[in-house]
Length: 66
Image 1 (cartoon, rainbow, N blue to C red):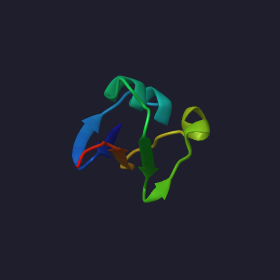
Image 2: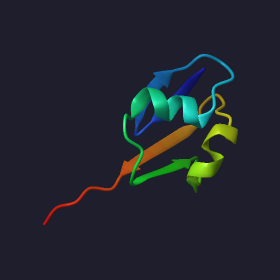
Image 3: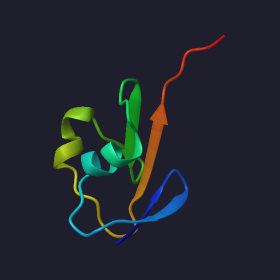
């Protein structure tokens, strides 16, 4: 299936969940915010959130700086 992650098209196997995608994409999830189709998904629901064709996923990582 094709989905979009931070504006970039990606191909995934069928029946993937959000946690699988995040584990493949990010090594450290501290400070991570995730939205699927403009809906924020709390971290405790990542493994329960199925991805489907044409979903748009936004991964945002908080950083420190001044």
